[in-house]
Image 1 (spheres, rainbow, N blue to C red):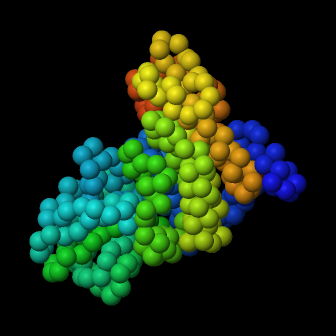
Image 2 (cartoon, rainbow, N blue to C red; image 1 turned 90 degrees about the vertical axis):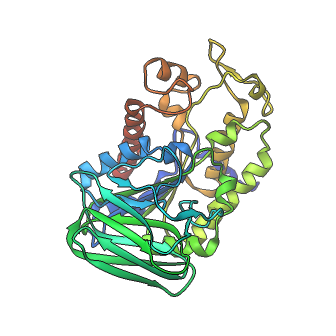
Image 3 (cartoon, rainbow, N blue to C red; image 1 turned 30 degrees about the vertical axis):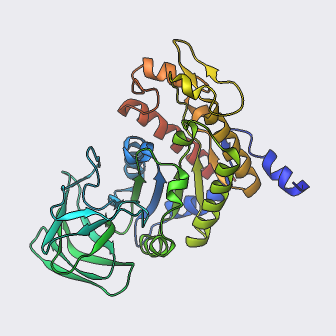
Length: 374
């Protein structure tokens, strides 16, 4: 490693690294816009559950205004699928496409003529812009006021936007004819405020996101136009039976470069994995180095710390914004005290609503401090 890279890596030493690279986001958030400022987070179950992202969304929208729910996986892609501000229906006449095509990594293909899926805004919320991303074909969007608008998709993949004069609270999407595969849909509102899209998959690792389709990602990123991309993987990599540090680092570097190429100029924030613990003895040796013992049979798998070390080093070398989630929880073994206090679930991995709110507040506090620095 040359002197310049060593110097850059040395800068990434605290809980907050290289937040100066997020200056475009800070500027976007501070200026009145013709569309909502948009955060798009891609990750694992911490993102999918929308506990932390939902609390972060609430903070931002309380400060800057409600810009809408943002991007969602189509329909209800799995049992237990949770959303905030929007309730999506279990779709009739659709099946999983079986391939992680786009940002949501879920895709549904219509199997019968007239297959429908719908969503309804929760009380107090509405939308005046609908986006549908799908393969070539015809879809019909029926809005809550009864208006029906056709969506004619002439390319695969393609995203189309429908704007409404009057705010809406529901919509139904219908595939009237030949099979169509929907990769994502979204709702936004107003000309300002903030939208935060959480696109997570339970159990996912970054290597799984790497299997998505470049053309679909490019079309979705162009259409959804995020102002900040957040990459939030690492927990599942830390709980594998045997961790391969070289393979993980290669995947991390490749996917960072890929997102930067597909969304040029959009700042990228990498979230380190939170503190998480296990009692599974098979994970004590899942990477070189000792497992951190935390009492009552709990320990942190050594691979989890290896993930953090690699992320920190890569963030330093590439001058990427990186946030040490574990440090902001209180450091090693924090998950034990958080679970005891009811802030985490008994699995010592996932967050309850009060804990998620604390995480979101810590992250937003660090971002606000960075935005105020000269």
